[in-house]
Image 1 (cartoon, rainbow, N blue to C red):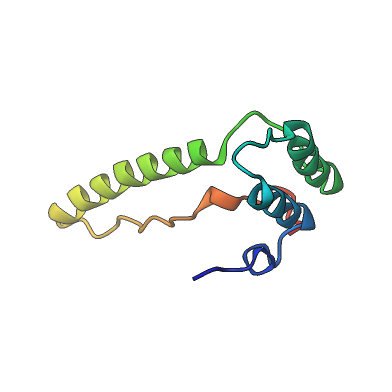
Image 2 (cartoon, helix red, strand yellow):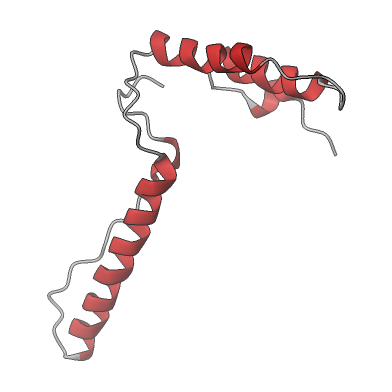
Length: 103
């Protein structure tokens, strides 16, 4: 089964579709134009006024998972001690964070 690039990138900036189409059309012996690829994503960042913060979303996800794990263990311990005052943790997925709420 093949999913068209346009379907995969629906709702995202057009640069994502351009990037995937470019990659899909590369032949094995072709040398990728890395500058072109970087410029596509730099363009998205500039258009949306994103600031490059040198933080990776998966690091935030790892922190969230670790933090949630610690809090869940503490909540389970509290529940085992008949303490029902423990608040449930809200789990969010920061994998595609829109820091400026523009998407």
